[in-house]
Image 1 (cartoon, rainbow, N blue to C red):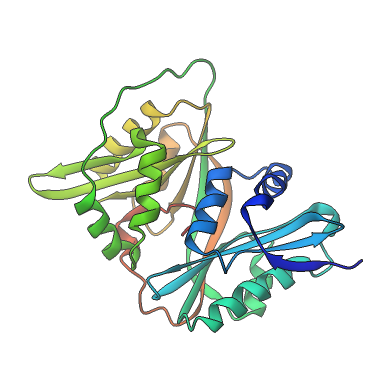
Image 2: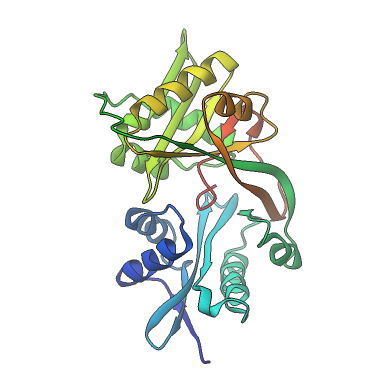
Length: 279
């Protein structure tokens, strides 16, 4: 079997979505466009007989650290080193850009591979899922002013991702929520309309009460039968809150990094991350 490896381009998106659908993941065509917009020279495909059979993506955040995501391989091509080769290309690209730190969210299946490349554990995450039935309705909304939220998120995340978060607000303004106590931002959420589920994240709150308000409002505004949220286990409120509101455990994830980790941000303020494809 002869595989060719090359850069991902916009013409590959339908085939990349086929891989997403086979794997049961939640990304959309718009997410692939976000990857290409953020890193046109850092997204890769494995190709066999003109068909895309694997992908990997990267996003560099302000030169402080980079994100590796979408390491996905068609089931027929797994166990043949395809995923390893795609990961190697992502790492080589980021090394060529002299990025001091690379991060990713690993599944239990993928973690041993990442450890071989020098990734170490930063903290644990769990995906929780809310399944609803019937008509969940619609909600009117207004787009909040988010410039101060974007500045705060840079401090919490450890790097600027304002273009990405602004893109989420443009696509799904009903999921961008801001809680304030006086002039201070007490919490915020963003969200995405995925191919399978609405995805809550990032979800930040300075208190449990604010976390409850944001979670319940996000769920109220969601129009899909499924809602996903990737909760940080180090957060005191996130998992207990989603459990008591009917969410079910879906799968574990492990945030890992390679290189330095001097720009770790303030993850203790986060109830949930944006997602394993973006950080």
